[in-house]
Length: 125
Image (cartoon, rainbow, N blue to C red; front, top):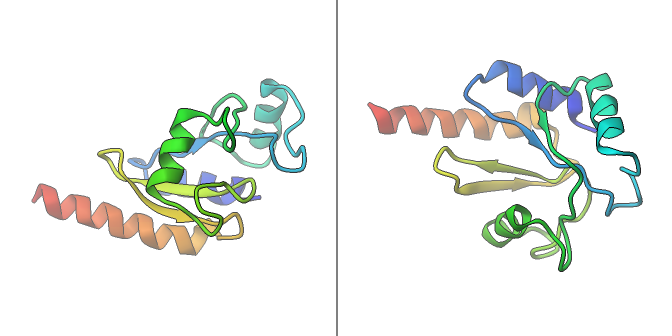
């Protein structure tokens, strides 16, 4: 599920904002209320910002997700394949990578985070 791993990344990298957007568009995996989903996520270790349920595919997809999908298409084009598709966005708001639901945040995404943070530090120097 990745909640615990994403929480670890959030703790390891204070400058990293981890944002969760539940969606019930995948096998009805998020049928509860926003509060129930938040409580479940916290029970799995989520200590990061979790937003209200949204649509990530179709005509009612949230504008943020339309933007992310346009900038970082995946295996299925602009569609989100399944829950826990993850995007890495730089400090300027540019989506720089997209990861499948099966991608383990540690170590796979963490490597990209370290590269991005190193690049940002180099730019400041």
